[in-house]
Length: 441
Image 1: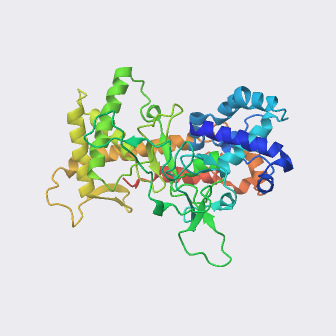
Image 2: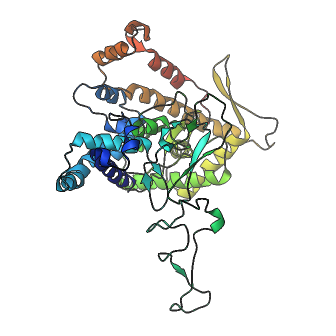
Image 3: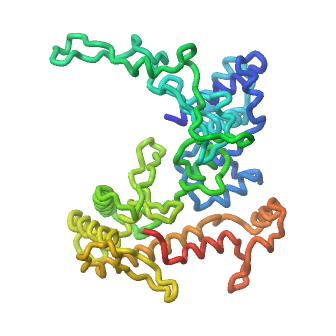
């Protein structure tokens, strides 16, 4: 639904652009980028352009997963063919598909969700601020307005509240959306406010935050840029990547049922050794219930930890029993929570170390250690496989092109491995991270 709104807004923006000086928004349009914003959602695979090279490097990354899940280019092409092109032709407006892509890139990288009436909108001035996590300003609107007429006050479109204890046929009173005191915009309600939330020093650039939970993959796909360090970054795996053995449909359903039950139990204990990831939506609009991932701090998601723990426990079980496996998994996690986990740097061994504050009854801690070690090994293997899969379609020519783009000698970008083959420095660093035994749980 949101993508359809974005495409409809892009069509409206395109009409205004084609209207030139006759558009009431002509001055604002002149402030917009003159060419298509390079959002990854519109990168092309053909033609040898930079986007095509970049897409090959994105193979196996979170960017590729977003592109596959959302397939924006296909949806935009369909919208252009079935809706935009016929409408523009009827209005005698000359436009090509490239113009539609340009307008969509502006909407994707600059639009705001304003309120229940305006929905996704272009907001002049507000879209001039760049994004950062530690922002000084943010957009404020009265969101709860009438979705039909935009009124903040009581209007004819409001539903009537029935009088308590009355018959169904007896009318009640109109329910106001908000109090008059909350309505700041007395003169013009069709506006927004940019509000400061942190001190701004003279000469400093002023930043907005487009969304408090945007990882770099989302920023690249929808806004066309990355943050040098992003605490919202997340690396994920599919169920098939974690458990490559083909499962029958009933086995697949039973496994996920057990994992969900384990996740539910773990969330009820509010464990600080795991984190609960944001839940994206699928192409059908339904939430993706389980996110098997590791965040920017190296902390496992509750979903991934539960799956690996359930898989480890089930190796010891002949019968798949939801209650018993969930109980055992929960007990193991509670033991891990009570016991400190550290790495002996001198010997390179993983040891369970009892903290001073831990409860005295931890006799079962040694039983949890094999499960924890298997989970650590599984995560390291997943990371190693992930690294191998990144940029799997990149050719040697592509690598040299990137060296030219960076204006450095290709030989300085990496190092020789034991076999004499060339490795990029990024890959070398990631491999060392993947080998590190001290992943935080």
